[in-house]
Image 1: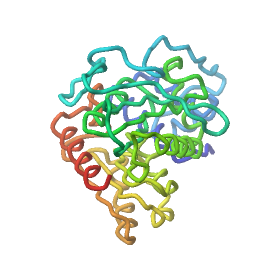
Image 2: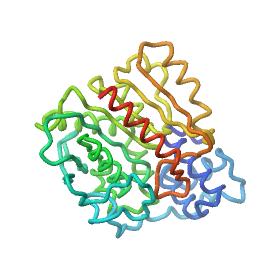
Image 3: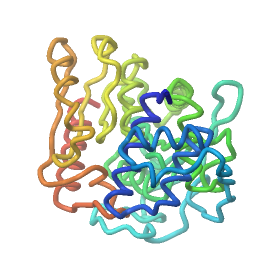
Image 4: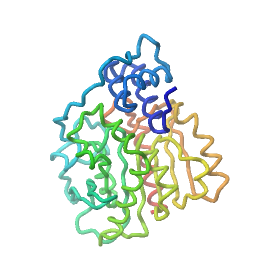
Length: 325
């Protein structure tokens, strides 16, 4: 029987929901599961496990999909000037906005250089900083936009490309990105954020005692896990990500904020166990369920974006960071 890790299971279930909802083709769903599991036999078993019928799964003798290099400019480097492609949020901050400087920075982690997109206000004194963990799509223009939103609010924001070792998100087949992220493993990703923390703490525009973290979907799960491991974090905000191991919750030092969607029963349905684990500790926390919305409702380049609740969640995040960073 196929054995799926927490993040593999999380992503395959998410893609199954998208497939069932008609937001993802059968071909794309199959390719992504195959890249995550590593073989067509394992892909078939995983697809059956999440609810596919036998007629929907590939045969074990079917060839593995071949990744196609992407021609996208969505990853390493800065976005082109102007509005973010597909962005519909009134909160969007275009590249080139006056008073905000952006750049691609690199720093060492695990014996190699990691790339990140840094956005901050020009000529700012030392102040708070936020590390941002992207969704399962990798570092995209939307996540770079989120970094600029933080910068506009007065934070130095560093959005990592967790696929830097693989050459960066921009050059990868989008269907292969989730598999590359799960194959790398959460410990590597948390290690990269530990290195990013050290990088930010050494910058003269950052107060090292005021560094937080923010993440979305897959990145929300990495944010929760980082909260249990990085003792220097002051505050975190995780948007609809899988919970950390509950036995690690008492070790959290940061003030943690969790964003959940009412209709996202896959994630929100499991949230009460995390809420109870946090309530049994002295950890400063707030878990908020936003009404009438589904998973990924904050991403204004996606089909599930909801302006009213996304704005409310962002404003609540700003209030949380303002209070605890």
